Length: 330
Image 1 (cartoon, rainbow, N blue to C red):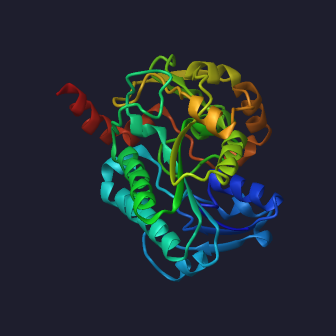
Image 2: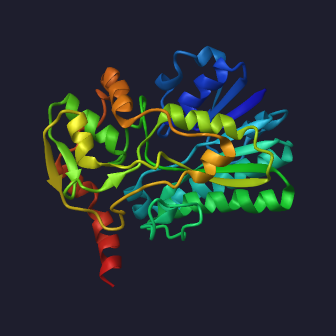
């Protein structure tokens, strides 16, 4: 089967591409390498077709959608602070880019689109575990743009009949997770700090809990979604078993330092996974201890990642506090 993966040189996309190859599928990767890395796909690059392209601009890359059966749309800008500083850039990538993917899929009669949405659309949830019916309340432009992308899929599925599945991802982690760019994904920050023997920077008191979901479990859910026949489905993709951030520091066996808690962040992320368990027959297999052990075996991947200190984080998150702290004081 011919399958396209946008963002296929990134963290999740590269794992998905490798998995699909083992299943005998013909894989095309479309990536502008803004956050993805060719090194992520170097072990199997000769087995895929790689196209460097910006999905926010229509071009010849869309010709590859001809005779494609499935599109996994993973390409997106994913940092919070830059989305506050330059929301237009995020709308262009995550909203316009998504519309380009969906309209190109419809034009070339693609059977199905599988979309990586974000649980950040829930903002600070009212209920835990958080179900797919929770109120939508994005707290920053990144979260908003990912939700708008999901809405485009839902609207086009209703009008044009293309099958779409959206996964609202909860704190995905694993080997090859993001190392570049601004202050962001926790594991990328912690592992670079561990390598350089620097204390881990824990936000607040570290009691906040996150629903960490290992990459191989995510890929399994994505693959199962190929068989869904309904026009549009939304699934939470997490474990339902959150763990305190300070416990992650213990698993990494590192000293830590506390930095100020950030406004607009929930004290917990915890997915209600009843729907995905019942309808996809999916449940997570990798425990947090097992997942961290796997990551530590490949810790040198983060050797060139930026090493964040409390001072650098304070500078990098200045606009986060400037805009969101003001919001919560109103």
